[in-house]
Length: 262
Length: 352
Image (cartoon, rainbow over all chains, first blue to last red; front, side):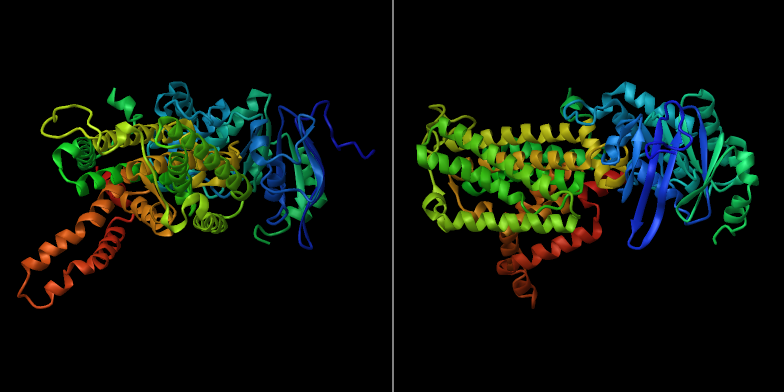
């Protein structure tokens, strides 16, 4: 394999990382991870707690700066670009720890994403309350995540499950090409989980989006993923077809063999 | 029509609507309704401070930026117009030139401070602004050949704004329309226009991004908003409005000096007015500035009356002696912050 090659590179990967690495002092949290993600595929990223999954996400979407290696979006090196720029180029991220605008309403939270997508954030003079198209679009995405009845509630007042839904709704409203779900169903009650899983399923069915999913529930991963990659101690240790990866000894040992909080 | 003027941001509380209306009407008819120099001075000061406090609220209440340099921009406006009128004589050209120079200097400074230091944490930003503002104040008092030093500068204003000028030969509604009255209405209308303009800005898509940054700058960045640019823009805008407030103040006082523009005391007054009125509401600036300045100007008188009225009762007359007015002003602030942590406007809106 040559230096310029990325393993499993498709014809035109939407997103790729090459030797992506970050060190915190002496600790290497993500270690030379090279991976490519093609449009229309759902890749599950699994690994024990502390394996570096969220850190890997943070490097891809720009919340953390890489110590070494590159991130490519549509073939462009975006490693040096700030998070906002990567979002504008089509990356969407739903955070694991809910990350909302607490004192704004549910609708306003989503609408800020719609507005970012519509590129009207720098408009000083038009009235926010009179952008009918943006308001309707935000309502549309609220309905998508079944939050429409909480439209005018302040985000801080939502239940945990509703906050998780809003988190996903905000990402949907960005209308990205790359969807990065970081444990979207964590802590949700049993009856709320299907709302999110349906959504992921529908996104996948559209066939043109690149979906990355960090998830602990193996049944979810098995039913949704086209491909699984396994991170362990920051290193990519397995990559391939879900059934094969789950069955492989390295995963049995590195992931499934380790207790959930080990 | 009214909705559009208020940018769809209605007071949303009956009490608040009434209060705002009282302030508006009071200021609009002040020269006619409240005769005397102190009354019109107070009214003009309220107008200027509504603009100044509202522009500070744009930073503190809407964007979540803590700055101590706001009086510096206010001073740049006052000195810009003041020194220009002092050097070139009392013409409109001098006002225009002073205004232009002050705006350019103020916005450039705000841009530089913003771009270089808005990346750092809030507390460090506050320190940096404090340092820059102190340096500016020292510079203004040291360059006494230009600025008049601690004494400041008195200057002439255009004919029509001078006290001796009469707009009409006959009094209108029993009031001579002197240059002071003309100046008052210039200040009043400019303040009204600036306030409505700011209301428009905070209710624009841009204004909502500022609020998003205040709420969670990390997430705002993740949504695709370059927060440092937005913060810098807010900084420049607030600075420009503060410069204009400074110009109005200079025109009203026909004097400019460090004590009335640059002092840290004024900075603290602004902070208190924003907090008492209610951060992040703009209407809070109106209520906060009005109450604060009324208290500053009339509390002493009120206490004098109260002290005289309680004569004979032990202790009370001493406690209410006019010399203790600062003590009572302090008590009022503590009480208002304690009972209205979200400010008066925040409290009124929550009830509604």
